[in-house]
Image (cartoon, rainbow, N blue to C red):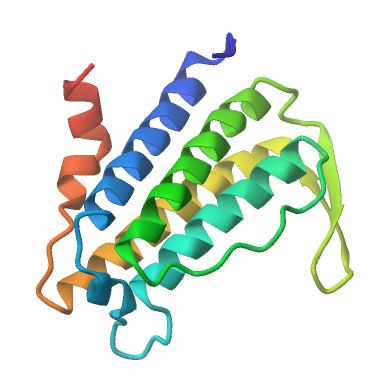
Length: 165
């Protein structure tokens, strides 16, 4: 793994990767039908949210490193589809840590799917990646809770991560 001048940032990114891994490990234990669950007022299924979390993580990393967007991947409908998503997320999380070792103030440029040019400092993409993953882990947990299934976010929080160090 990279050497970071900012150990705090690296620890934050390590926690995110650990929490992502734990959430996807829990998803892999669900029934196939649970991946289709949605919450009231949302058309996004648990599988679609998990898919979005992974694809976005890959896209943040590609932007950080100036790479083209990855090929589309299917939304998981079977629990067996979770393992490849989890592996892709772990790879993206590791590359995010690599990207965080680069100059955070350097402006990263890309073209959106709609063709708009975008430019932000690298630190914005890193911060967004962390917040985005947290948001969607919570969204998955809330959706599952609406169907009586518990994804214990307290077991994935920063306090629990720190206690395990």
